[in-house]
Length: 239
Image (tube, rainbow, N blue to C red; front, side, top):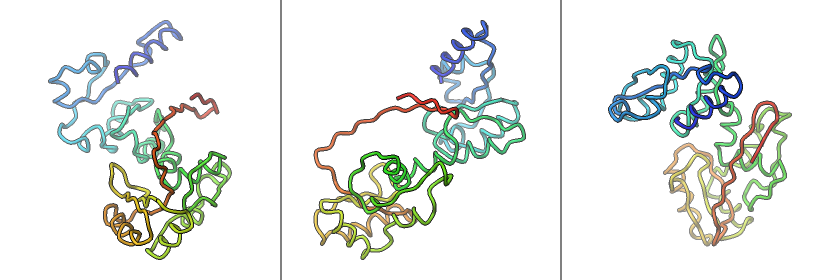
């Protein structure tokens, strides 16, 4: 929040010769107020919100929208984590009478890229090299079709132990059985042979109930690298 306020005020000064051209209304819990958090001191207006778990405050989409309407803001910046990764927030803001802007991705791409199966289909459709998995033959034209067609997505969903066994054998061991909606170590199992598949599949199902499941080739001795990508609605993108 501090970096966001500073950078926007710097931009406002460079553009309008007035760093206070844009006003900031911030949410603050009692805990943050007591800690005298710097972002609160930098704000133009402060809104007291309930403390406790983030579902009471910073991750509460309906509370954020209600406050945005009450204070007649033009845009909402939700930072990182909390409500910023909930597609309900941009979708709901877009339906407000004055169409409050969400500074971040729209709901549809957030849903598509936040889903492990969907994001992999989009990546391989764009020509990105992907490791072998049960949906490696699937393609879609996301822009033209306005999303991933349900019938394409459904083909990537491993729905039974038998189907899982078949796809594991095709892709090749060792392999990972993963829940598309899993995370934090839940909904993922490594299998090295056919005898382990059924048990691992049931475990993944049980840890993330209702989630689509897929199987992907294990990359041994892999290293995790991330590239930050920033794009806007006008077609500009930097990495």
